[in-house]
Length: 107
Image 1 (cartoon, rainbow, N blue to C red):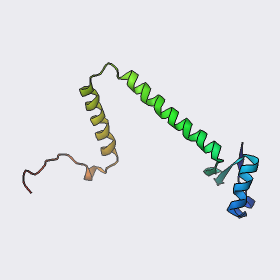
Image 2 (cartoon, rainbow, N blue to C red):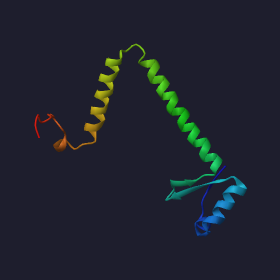
Image 3 (tube, rainbow, N blue to C red):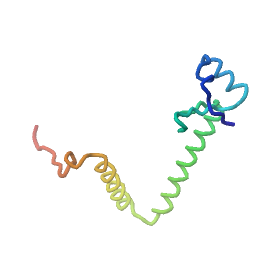
Image 4 (tube, helix red, strand yellow):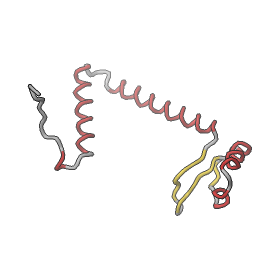
């Protein structure tokens, strides 16, 4: 169960907040101007969350494997390189993008 934190919750000593979490098994959701900004979960809820994220990640990996089973390892490497280039270049302002690269033959 999730409960929205109140200003009273924020004034309590942290140990008391932890005790409340443990005794009620209610997570606290912190909002700022109506927007969720943080949550305080019980340990068991956090472990369930981690397991859910891990399972979703593995499901995505398995889906990608199935979708690309017909590709050779070279084709997969080329696609990975292309995607990495695309992501890296997207995050770099145009003026700073690397357009060519060479390795010096002597130092």
